[in-house]
Length: 349
Image (cartoon, rainbow, N blue to C red):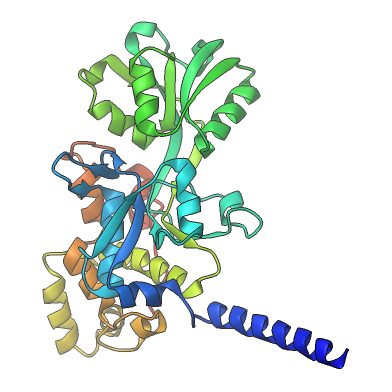
């Protein structure tokens, strides 16, 4: 009996020690990424402007550039990435099983996913504030949400989009029939083939899909916004070191835009920081002074490497969603806080 008691106590102590080590940033997937020298990033690959695989095999989009920013910060090489295309139902399983290191796939930040009692993931800061909408063909004569009463709607299965659609229509007393598909491409195909009167997704995804239609002007996105959809990259819960590193890489992209530091001029800013010791805030941010990078398990100059490879948040946005891009989406709430938007970052100190 004493031996059994001793064994149980020892096992419990070991479990507590393991949990403490993980919580304090000891054992982390960040170390595995750095050892492997490759980042495995889960993406969609099917959403122009956010994550799209072209016919020549190149990935592009805001979500893709975030993967590249993480790779630049974690291992110093923005191209050292293995992209894994995942459907919405597959994404959390891939994260839990370790098939991917992190997910950058237009995923809504909400309580049931963030909580330990739900999906138990760890979200980085929001990188795109979106809202769910509805798209219809002009020829159908549908101009407002009430006109969809009794109609069929194409929607992705296993997503918050499906739940939001039901919540919004139930609250308005609108009857409808959902036609469910596994991914956005199938939703779009069903809509274009006339299997439903409307398709629903985040308004950004609707705009991206419409940009690829033969005649985009024959389709309209209704004014009704069904939900808030704050999109953010994420990692498995319980890994504070990786979660912290992701969080502050995103904040670095935002802070760089606030300061006017770009991919083209980051070298000049670094020279300035090295020469002028009184620029304490800048020197900390660029890793000239202090050990902020080391606290995250990264190199001191991780911000410089990230901006030099990818640019700041504004540059990423304009490259893929700006007025001259293939999927122009007005920046709106995704502007910096000082410009009336919601994008802001805590201080690097």
